[in-house]
Length: 482
Figure 1 (cartoon, rainbow, N blue to C red):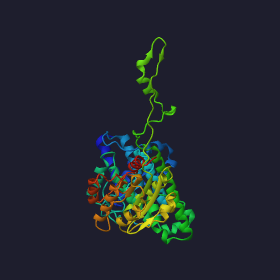
Figure 2: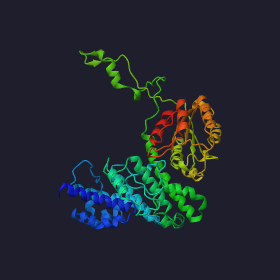
Figure 3: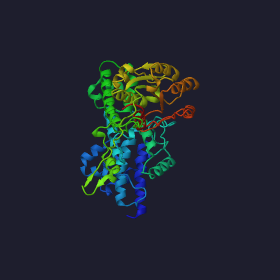
Figure 4: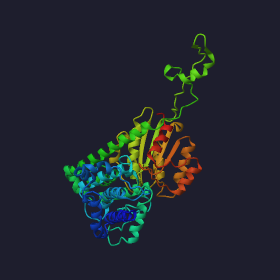
């Protein structure tokens, strides 16, 4: 097979996959040719069907397991029979991840769990750790509906005829660039938007009434958000199952965040404190180096005039942690992540933690700061923002400003005008409080902040911290005596 023919066949496979993912009827027209290509590549036609999961394909064809873990086509390499086979396998991953978003029909709990499983296979093939691509938040202005697999927005109805040749050509071009997919933020935004749509298409209230069905659900951020929003309308077995799912997700995420806290660098060494002259702090290499001039060649001994010790004392002036989290609709990732993070730091020695959630009202979650599950059950997601009201409640917890860290997690889009909250923040900072403003926190690092606030906070030397959880953990460990 010459390269031109191989390129044409690869294009046909990708076009067919994209058309299927977008719900286009053109996929049916390409089915016979796509089947012929797949069979000639020595692969099962099952790869063209979005219904079987990747795991089911591997169970039926175990010889494909290794190939499905490393199938991203090389955009720069030659197109031959081998690369055509990789494209066919990669198309299966694309199909299973993006096709479920087409249409508006109701989906079952088992279908949602299968989609989560297939996203895991997709992440593994791209070299990401489990859950990494599911940590993003929807990009500003992007529809919450099903995203296309290559940066082309599908119609809200998910219908096929509205997808034009130009749409498919653009999508195909995007797939051929970079690692063969959208940019990482686009992938994260797309998967987040699709997951929300799939959760919304489940008859979640009915699923929760049956424990066997509820246990088929895979806990995730989108599912947890939906459960938190619906908890006030649930009762009996449905409420009990919802709580079980929320706790499972909270416990899983807490384990991951604890690892982040442990692995992050500790606070800076305080050079103003003399090192303790104990053996465990003895710097042997430095001691030997500084005493080399005292080497006695006759005695073959090193005469030591002085011992040198490492400085290990860390700053301990900040002992009170006040976390204030915006619980409005756009901040669900932050609410969940930071509630768990506050509980982790609350469990550390010498840290006294307080937690507040706010929209137009303020909820003091401090009594449950050590139990993120119970704290989350007391949130009321949604509403606008009244930052000044939250600041008045949080500021009441300040005793010694120089021994206080206040973390403010928000997109800073205020219900009122901007000036009252900024003036209060400036006053708190000038009193000596270590004030850390943080953009909307998500695992993927996406955050969107009111430009006016971003500029004003930067002008007083308090720039908004990146929305990455890793960055926030490092900031806290640097500011707290841990």
